[in-house]
Length: 116
Length: 113
Image (tube, rainbow over all chains, first blue to last red; front, side, top):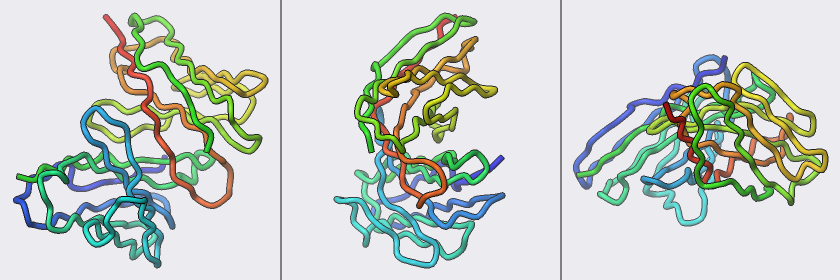
């Protein structure tokens, strides 16, 4: 079945540094990927829609200059958290549309970001 | 996308069937019902989806009422590993343009030994 690989699974960084999270579709092509953020005891909140070969679409309230998204190929989207601060600590999850199960969505395993 | 309403939490005894309800009274004719679950600190996992007919796969069964205003996800023999937050999501399906999934608060299912 369709697999989405997300890396790293966890990362700890210092305040002010940048962190890159990768999301790869391993056995299918994904023209569109989605990035979510989840704070403790809350549901997933969509941050942005990543489109291959074009600019990402950000949800209201999400700073595009802080959360840089690059979708340079049909199998890879990256999210870079720039100048991270402790309030950016969260669980980041990517997903892609799954062409093998009537267009459900496959999710990565998530990245736990802790900014100290 | 249509809004869904789910109970906040449910318990189920191990080995018994878990029946998770979802109300989606404003569902449109082209909207599918999707179910996902999220085990703690993992990404959501697809379970099943349907339009109007009942569906069954190796994980679960989905029962959709005739008026499509509600549905029930059934885990026939719950195990401890089924403890997770279950999300019912309604959105257009099929081969149209990719749109995001909008997650509500879901139901925390706890399977008890």
